[in-house]
Length: 113
Image (cartoon, rainbow, N blue to C red; front, side, top):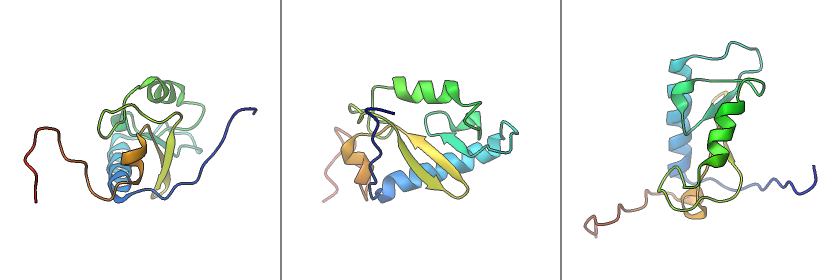
């Protein structure tokens, strides 16, 4: 499709951990039951694992989310897809969280150094 672009990015440890946690929660919650089920929303992992035909609501929710799922800052355009086991976890993140190897400090918390 015109205007679409896929960019390969080396995901940071923080987002990989978030994707693994979302995948685990989704597997615990169940599946849409279709053979092609292999997608998880990091926004609502309790919705379970779903296939492309069943995931319209989950994808819409992610696309309409303005903030990064990790820190709340404005998110990058589009979705990030992180592979976690047998599923692809879809996330909305900002550029900083996408590649972070340690969690961002919580605003107002004391400096750990």
